[in-house]
Image (cartoon, rainbow, N blue to C red; front, top):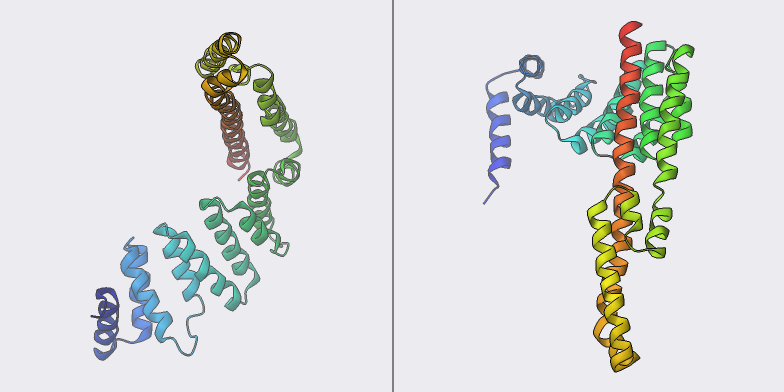
Length: 283
């Protein structure tokens, strides 16, 4: 049996064009649907236009379809249509706009490497506002791939000179957090003294739990060794000791990564606020 969605699409095409509605009428109707916020209805009409537009009369159709997929949260489909739109678009300014929208889709998907690749392929715009936008998006992409020096450089090109010290302060504070909670360092602390890494990152309960469990098993292991011998001690306590000892190290690393992720989010928010405040004061 033919799937319902395929049947509905074919039936809609047949009704539309057998009724004599021109492709131009369909395009205009889709425009009105889009403006009214009827995104799903507009998307179907735009796709009809793309299907029947054999003469490539509507060169912006894939740009429009990409916008609709973005509006409905289907960022993968938006990217695919923006790809086509980029290839057929002749106007450099509009092509840059489409690439920026593609980058936004990748941001939504946390694909910062893909976003960076798209942004670095943009030719330098003549318009300063667009150039600032490209620099800001590129700074976000560099920040997402954890190249903070490149991110700072791009942001410095967006902000006025008097705001650079504030930007430096934000990045310096973030750098201190990265060094303080470096996962390798936290792991080493928990290797040397179980629970120390968790407590250092502020996870006191988990740290004390590691101290008590590993310490208690150590005492039991020593007692079993003295009473029954090394083999019996290893068989009875060894697996439990290994489990909680290594588990504490893993928890310490996880706590460090969580601390860095939280600080990264805070830093990102501060950067965006700094840029927004500057833009609002200098529109």
